[in-house]
Every structure is written in structure tokens, then in C-alpha cells.
Image: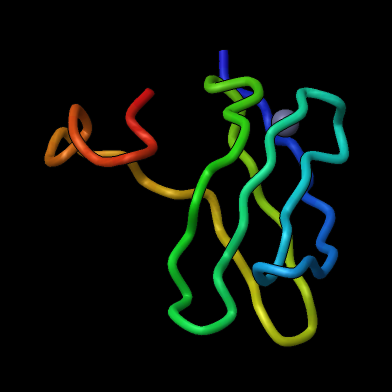
Length: 75
Ligand SMILES: [Zn+2]
């Protein structure tokens, strides 16, 4: 069962910080310079996270098999 969680946006030293406003503790940072998204805390992996800001919007990502087992955010 997937459910939607809203992300709240704040700014941190590394860039934009998205934090789950629904209490599952997911946190992600989008680096200001590169735009690279890093997941700090996975929170609820089954929830779909979405959020928006006037300058930036993020939709629920689609996950495919490619690269799912590699990369820094895999575990
Ligand atoms: Zn969440």
C-alpha cells in the first residue's frame, strides 16, 4: 500500500533540504552547485514523497530496475 507524504523544504549549508512533514524522518539534500540529490535518511521507503517550492518542484519518482542495486543511496 503506497501513501503520499509531503516534503517540507528548508535551506541548509549544503543546499536545499527536503524533510518529510509526515513524520517518517526521510531527509534529502539537493546540492546547490550540482543539483545532485542525496538521500540522508530513507524514512518510510514505501511512501511516495512529494513536495514543491516556488523555484523547484519535485514529483514522486519512478523507480526502475536499472542501477537500483548500486550507488550511494542504495542502502
Ligand atoms: Zn515520509
